[in-house]
Image (cartoon, rainbow, N blue to C red; front, side, top):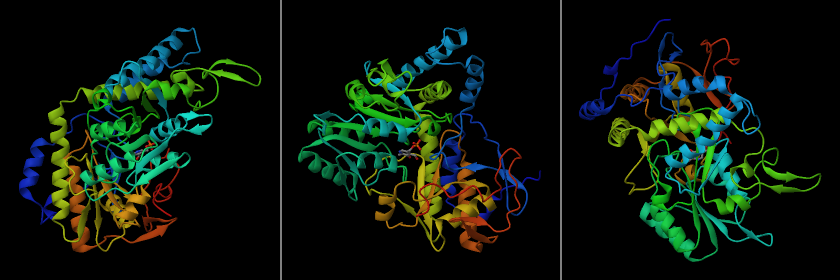
Length: 469
Ligand SMILES: Cc1ncc(COP(=O)(O)O)c(C=O)c1O
């Protein structure tokens, strides 16, 4: 395998000072599985894969991968067996709830329910909105900046939406005005935008919701992998997130929050384990997490999610923030220094942003830039509309943009490689021909190969979700 050495001299307009500052703070904070993965280049050779797509799914922490291997020999049925391995699996699964509750600073009586992912968690909560005599007691209120996971589940119940204002301050005012009209039972809000990474003032919104008799759910799919959350302190009623964005890509998500609605709500998965007593044509449902966790639970998903939260909780806060903000500033300054590149944000007064940078390159379709960066520079990032169609439309980006996202395993060199790729594109153009195949830009005559156990060949893996119309 030949390896291509990356030439950083190719970036003429790079802010040297910011690179120097950033490199001091930027070493991976924690080891991740696949950190040395080699990606084939379209013009031949290989480079270390620059993973700038943590916001979609983050790589597994090596501690979490090792833990998985440790637990695997004990893998057995949960809640259903008297055998030694079953008992251990059950203990690991149940203890994962306590670990996750601690991670989010949950109250002692908060329910911790394991799901498949954030989408599943929000759909579960949508089935638990309070009702009286078959009528919903109020509406769900949400902003237009939400990921579809925090938008579509509410369309099936009484709801109201608010178009976010150009500033966070004015957006909070708009939400206040809407809440003041009354009739809202739940404010559903993201902790951080999956499109731009901007953080919302969760504690302030929780207090606002409560002032008007509503509860709040925070979609922390993006926030939890980047900031400590304390729902008791922030007085947040429900929080949801996914293991696969939190360095535990083994298929679990979670909802943590006040038990009353959850215990009275529609069981999310009717079936074994979710009942107190089942009769031929009637049932008494269980309360607690069991009510919503019908079927055999994903013990390894829950266990690895819990283990990942312990690793994340153990990070030095200052080092964590310095690492992330150094890469982010370096990337934003570098991108803004390139002619024709625009960095997007929602609010002009955002004070804090997670490791996400959203941008467009003038004259190039976002999907083409993503395909080029992958094929010619070994950079993985996300393009498209990020499952946030209303926001992208309002930002004037109806055909999408690009998103670089990073986390604890990221290095400054990942950002440098992206900047070099974009700079080269603007200076010398594409180095290969690209065609649109099934709605996706792909290199023409792609001769790269996948490992033999991966069935597709490059370019045939299908369109990204929420990318195409
Ligand atoms: C803010 C936000 N909410 C919800 C989701 C959905 O998460 P999942 O795909 O794990 O259900 C995502 C995924 O990108 C997200 O970024």
